[in-house]
Amino acid sequence: MAGGVVIIGAGHAGGAAAGFLRQYGFDGPIALIGAEAYPPYQRPPLSKAWLKGEAGLDDLYLRGDSFYADQGMVTRFSTQATAIDRANKIVTLSDGEALPYEHLIIATGSRARPYPGAERVPHHTLRTLDDAEALKNALRPGQHIGLIGAGYVGLEVAASARHLGCEVTIFEKEPRILARVASADLSGFFTDMHRARGAEIVTDCTITELSLGDGDKKRVHLSDGSRRDFDLLLVGIGGLANTELAEAAGLDVANGVVVDDEARASDPAIFAIGDVTSRTLPFYEGRFRLESVPNALEQAKQAAAAITGHKPPVVETPWFWSDQYDFKLQIAGLLQADTRAILRGDPASGAFSVYHLDTQGRLRTAECVNRPADFRAAKLLIARGPALDEAVIRDPDAPLKPFLTAPPVA
Ligand code: FAD
Image (cartoon, rainbow, N blue to C red; front, side, top):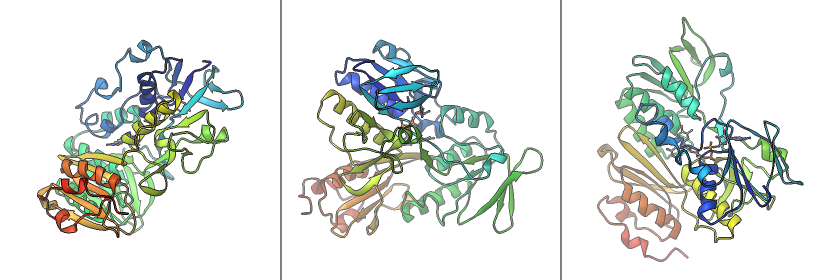
């Protein structure tokens, strides 16, 4: 692979990077190494259409069957990269093969955070297609599902499970659902919405133990002494970055592989992209480990552009989406302290946005439910930084277009 690119991790970011490299004119060797048995696929449908039986494999795959071979790429699926020798620029694989590289892209993603003590009790997590298939095969109408953790994946599974006729109870240790990732207004909306559709939501609770109940039941013990039995448990308490390879190779790692604006790691021949990275953003102070498809795609472009000598892509406002029942949530920007929330539209109508303004009136985050135009405007407004007029924001019918051409706050 002299002159070649080795990509470790054939997920959304790794698969996309392989495609962008060719798109940007790279005609050298590309090797794509993936621990899973499948070519790169999209994970978002796993908790949504896939669970409900509304998507097939062809809907998940990023590219058609023959794409990688047609593009002259070498693929190794069901294969782990086990070591990176930076001095000799060689990646070792679990089958003993050694692949030399000129540029290496680490795209190892993240894994489900394990729940302490849960290994004693059969339970599901949802990260991979195999996880989703196991969960889908286990879900039966009338079953009672216990969900531990009320993040986006947990709530999407709750919606899918209700759609399939299951009873659902969600346990969240924080005082509200989505506590780390959404505003109180948005949490309130999704709490009411899920309860109205039959899910039980238990917040502010401490699970002291998981054990086996009667028959095949799985038992959740709470600190108030109560016990709840379920047919099936799903633990969804966030992800952990797969940084072990990078750490062992001596790269800078701090809650993710530390990368610059070109997705370059602390070794100039090595890039890291997607969920596994710790990155900066021009709009916000600090470093972030983003777990989202837009981030995976953006960093895949950054790495491919840097390797092929193209200009880096313009940095996008970070964004994310989640689909639950008929509600499309789109979030632009990252939640910040010291902002004030302005409601645009009535949550009771099922279509509203929460705009978060800083002390200078600049938009820092927008949470939009079934308001795609608000979301599109928000991405641009966050990037451009004009001061917004609160009264206009509050009026759901007032156009936001005039702000798009206003000068940024100095
Ligand atoms: P991944 O897609 O996780 O790919 C990493 C790959 O690397 C994996 O296949 C892993 O097996 C492989 N790997 C790890 N270590 C090695 C090794 N040593 N050797 C070889 N291979 C290795 N994002 C959104 O924006 N919107 C959504 O609605 C949304 N929904 C989601 C729903 C679910 C159920 C899940 C799990 C995620 C969802 N996400 C969503 C997040 C999004 O899918 C991830 O941010 C995205 O997949 C990140 O891409 P990645 O390539 O960095 O990691």
